[in-house]
Length: 199
Image (tube, rainbow, N blue to C red; front, side):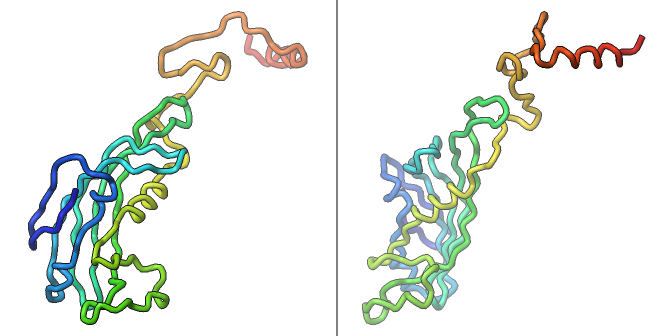
């Protein structure tokens, strides 16, 4: 779980914590400080429960930097994890590393001076703190992971894929298919290949 730390300090909490706890930070202390104040946070949390087609197989880890502004906070985060994918050529299950870059402005929902709710309608897409001055990053991390899912992942750049005849992985070694029979409907085409063969 991540906890608030002093300026230029990193703090990592050990133990079994839920994803929500690991990605929720109480920033009330930072909000009470002058603009320019900074918090460095270290993140270590369990995998999120994503959509059925996306499985996160590593915990979320990384660093966050929170800077106090006259409006709220500036968030800069560099997180990493991995998701389960299938190679688009050989259909092998692979671990796909994911790097997450978070750069957001975070604004309060409660006025820090009088405790009254703020009008958030003017900036509906801005990341907001909770009523208890907590920063909940789970939705932002979830969206970033889903957006990072590759269209056609490969187990390696030169993956040869599968044999079109037998379906074996071509990377397992050479193999051939002696005595392959041609589709009878294409038998007439054999003459053209035979005639064009060099003598």
